[in-house]
Length: 174
Image 1: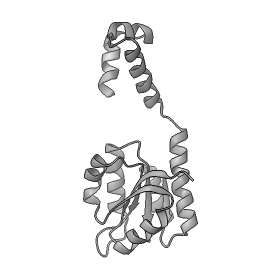
Image 2: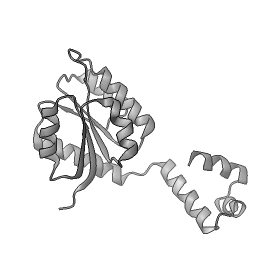
Image 3: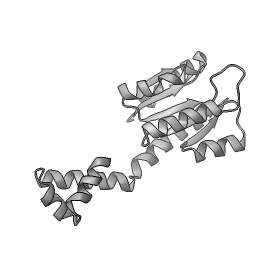
Image 4: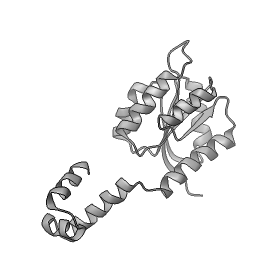
């Protein structure tokens, strides 16, 4: 069975992280863990991360989910293609909706069902691999066209049916 790539699990409870390592070992090639969310962006800059499993509460006595929503939005800004699945013991429908509206790929409650958790993570990654955004398609097409023209931007713009200035503007986003 082929394993999925790398998952980053962020939870302030070391026991949860240990349980996740055991549970996900047969599914993922690499399992990275953090007990505090402030290391997420640094970790993702150093390690190619295919999916993030993010707890929603990190401060003692806080169960609003606002910390998780903040880190979800932060991850989505820096790594918009990396899916984030939220994990919480204090689930309610409005929190799940807020998470999904903020860009979460899915929502899992503690205690979780092992088979369901693994299935949800696999489904998110499988769906991610099937759907390519229009921006990604455009970027790929522009790169291939420029390569085909051996870096000649005037020729590439002509092939793409756009002006050279438009090509420059599109390249700034790549």
